[in-house]
Image (tube, rainbow, N blue to C red; front, side, top):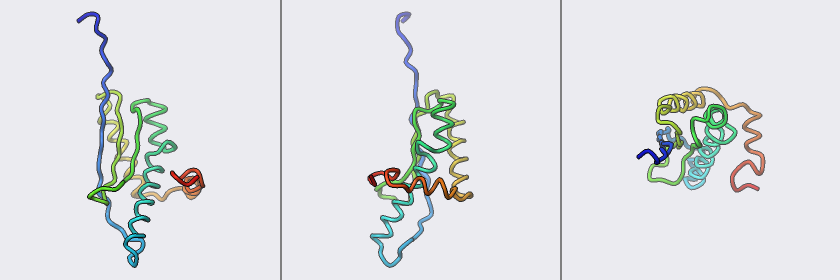
Length: 130
C-alpha cells in the first residue's frame, strides 16, 4: 500500500542471569533476604541504571536502545538477575547483547569506584529513601 507508513520496529530483550547465592546474615534468613535484595537493586542501578556507562552509551550517545535496566525482584528464583532493554533496530541486537555481557563481566571482576558507590547511597538516590 503506497500510502501506508512503515512503523519503526523495536525489539524487547530480557536476559536472566543466575547469580551465585550468597549469605550476608546466616543467623537471620529474613534479614539476609532483604539485604541480598538491596544489594541486587544497588547493583542494577550501578550497572544498568540511568547514570551507568552502558546507559550513557546505548541510550544517550548511540541511541540504539529506548531504555536499559537491571536488577532482581521477588520471584520464584531469587538468584535471577534480569536485564531488560528495548532495542530500536533489530540489526543492533547482537551489539547490544555484547555490551550487556561486557558490563556483566566488568561488575564480576572490577570493584565499583568507592565515590560512585557513595554517591549512589546518598539519601534520595536510593529508591524510596527520600
